[in-house]
Image 1 (tube, rainbow, N blue to C red):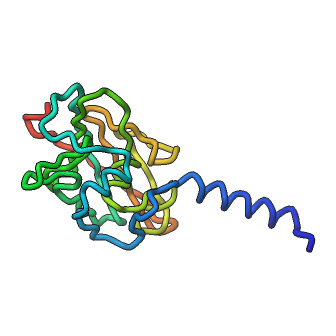
Image 2: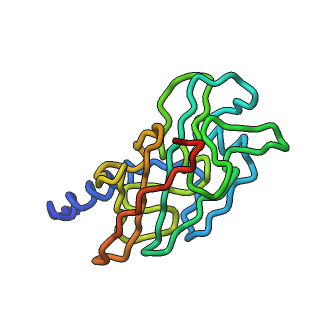
Length: 184
């Protein structure tokens, strides 16, 4: 069976786009709200993270994440990768629903937004966040970002905005985050 060049090109493009999203094997692709995972060690392992509870830190940075479905904010749950009662703190975690992602590691290395979403158990790729479908617009520190959002490095006081809109709807850049005094 002979295929037209347009069909072959379309198939290659689909393979490239879906292949570069590379979310974790058991991430959610349903609509929000997305709860915090309860299987902390497994989720951390899926993200290439480990429990560093009580270890001396060489790196301690904070990144803010804003997600919107159209104009509706999506809550980033507290205690993703963290549980005081279990004495568990992955190198990348949240404490509350502020959207602040904490990187606390005994070694300096690069942590990415893709790792956080793998740990959360929510699928993230160049064209989607979980089960939200439409157009994904990404901002990093107030500027449009055109790469794969999974690759965004988590650095100190970085602000990441993910906006999923219906096709043709104009996305709104998130307002700058008002960092609490302890993070300034």
